[in-house]
Image (cartoon, rainbow, N blue to C red; front, side, top):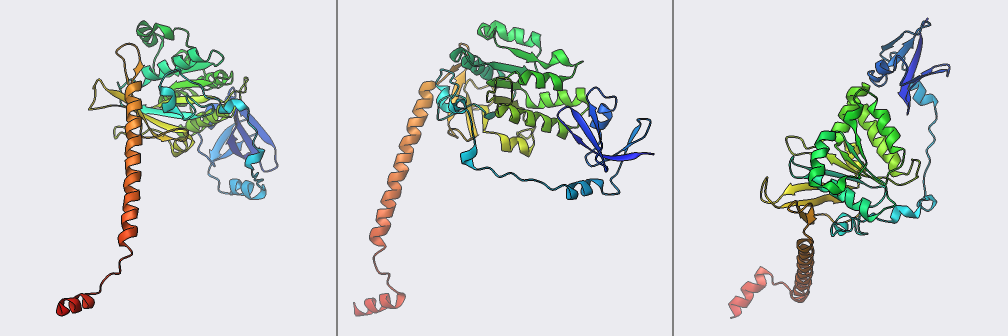
Amino acid sequence: MKVQHTFKATANGFELKAQDGSTIIVDRNHKKFNWLSQQEANRVINVYPNGKMTSSADYKGLYAKTSTTKRMKVKLTKLDDLKFNDDLFVPMPTGTIADKFFSNEGGFMPGSNIMAAGAPGVGKTTVLLELLHKVNAANPNKKVLFISAEMNQLDMARYLKRFPHWGQLPILFLSDYTDANPQAVIESTLKQGWDLVLTDSYTEVNDTVKEECNLTRSKTEKWFLDLMIAQNQGKNKRKVYTTFITILQLSKGGTFVGSNKLKHMTTAMMELNWKGGENSTQRYMEFSKNRLGQVGQKMYFNFDNGVTFDGARYQRDLLNEAMLAEEREKLEKEDGAFDALFGTLEPHTEAEEETAEAEA
């Protein structure tokens, strides 16, 4: 006789639960793991005495019964009760003018998530790898990591010819694990504890895990975002608040590829673009969202001699913006004084004006 179970995903696989409270654990090595991974949410799993499993719609409302009989405990948090290590508030500088561009404190802030998007060929991977190297060089006690889902070792060898100082950057090539379990590889690697992780790209990491582990797109994205949040919170061996710089791909319409959850958990959204059209020699980074710093400011960079940032132009733009803001404030004050002066005059009615004209 079959026994009906509800099921839910866990950190290591799935948990099946019968109405009598008994459970069945299905880990990644279980022969039914891949089959369960393909089942839609709220499907009832029928388990037979011989171990056979089938799925069916929830005609009896088992999931509704589970949700109504189990009382949810909600924990409210007071800000005074939050405890964090002081390291959370210490920035990771690059030692370049770009530090003030990234945050008001100067550098990348621990536990933050920066999404970087831009058109193909603008130099996203190059400039961000250079920044990763700069952080590594300026902060010897910090650990940095590059997760590459788009390039293999041969691709990076060509980069190394142009940028030999990248030679000591630790890189996880997902292409080395296509026959393994990339989900477990990423989890195991991140749990070592890294201060700054550059991922290229968000879409390719999700697609690789989705295809190799037979997961749905929504489950794959939830897994990856939950993993990032856990590392943000220091849930790793070194107990460090990991910062992620994640490269995003753009759709044909120029919009970011990703869910609303991705957008909401993002600390900053950075766009890389050309000034004056594609393949222009002038390229820049600009934040459209930044909880830790300024938005709308452009940081120009070029590849003429490695990767260099135009600090003089950035400072000049900041000065011009400050002067414009001061001028706007001055005009607003003058407008206020004008209104205060002429607003005290009594307005004449049309009848009073006609009487005055007749007397004249």
